[in-house]
Image 1 (cartoon, rainbow, N blue to C red):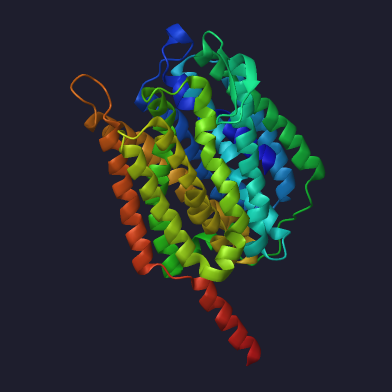
Image 2 (tube, rainbow, N blue to C red; image 1 turned 90 degrees about the vertical axis):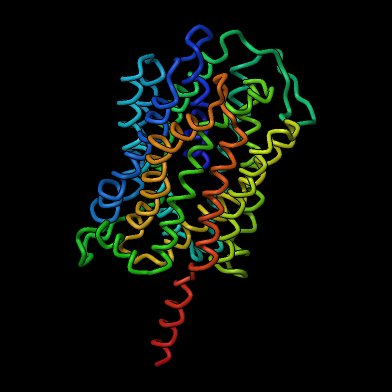
Amino acid sequence: MFLLYAVYGLWFPIAARFLSASPDIGGLGFTDGQIGLIIAVAGAIGAVCAPFIAGQIADRYFSTEKCLGVLLILGGAIKWYTGFQDSYTAWLWLSIAYAILFMPTLSMTNSLAMAHLRNSKREFPGVRVWGTIGWIVVAFAFPAFWLQYDVKLQWLPPFFNGSDFAGKQGLMVDSVKFAGILSIVLGVYCWMWLPNTPPRRDAPQKLAFAKAFSLVRHRSFAIYLCCAYLISVVHMVYFLQMSKFLPTLGLRDAYIMPAMALGQFSEIAVMAFLGAALTRFGFRRIIVIGAACYFLRYMVFGTTSLPLWGIITAQLFHGFCFAGFYAAGFIYVDRLAPKDARTSAQTVIMLVLFGLGPITAGKFVNPMLAKACTTANGDLNYSAFWYALGAVALVATIILALFFRDETESDASETKAESAT
């Protein structure tokens, strides 16, 4: 988990910044539409392919840890090569190829971890939190050691201060190369040292993803998927705009990753209590709180009259957003899914969270909303932009609060009743 999310966190948060920056200062000069295709749509294609490729393979044919090793090594080689490209076409196709290999690993690590835990509801947050720690480490280490010199530690965030190298936007592209190398290292680790997690070759239903998709017969699971689609749209737009939004408020480029990583600090704190919270309050309340925190975060972002520190502090909502909606959702799906289709079940939810939602965000919502909120002088009215996204999150919150029910509790009650009989 630590290494996997370090690979992801190395390049993903700042990609929009170096992809959009002018070539004169070391960037690549891509448009919002092109960036949306490279970051959001490419990743979405990988998520869409995941149930049919990785989910089926890991659930029916090969051990999960071996699949992870192959996908991460091949994906790492592609990512490393991508870092040397400067054309939009090369970035787009290489990003699609990489996403097809990488996106399934997110669900496969979830299913592998929960397959070896005695109580996934209580114990999984303690495992998944190491992914958050990995994201934080690279968010601070990369800019401190690669984008600045004469770096000195300090007590206040971002906990370091130094002088920027010239052409720092060009140096940001190196995050992609480092991510590729780290992915290859992780792939070797997965192949050699992760616990054996064999497939279920004797399962009566040979198509694991077909069995996983049958989960939509559960009414509340279908409701969760619909709301997950809305939340994943606003979640992806955050990554498409935040690294460009913060500099408009006066934040230096070297501090973008640390500022965005404040959300991961709160994620660690929330994940530490997520297992206990789910046991005490149940999936429904926690998931509704997670969706509501998306609404609150975008309301703060939209209030651009706030001081810079106030906008950055709103990143702390991320812990409640991700742990409450995403992580709790992963655990909910694992408890609802049949044992012989758990990997595929995880890829179904990934299909929505990292597939359909990001496609909508990158291809339609982000460019259309950015165009609608652009002022006469060509500047983006971020206040209206973030408020619009907050409204979408509010709709999802209301739907969940009114209609979502935890069907794992009813299933557990039925099982106990049958055992007693």
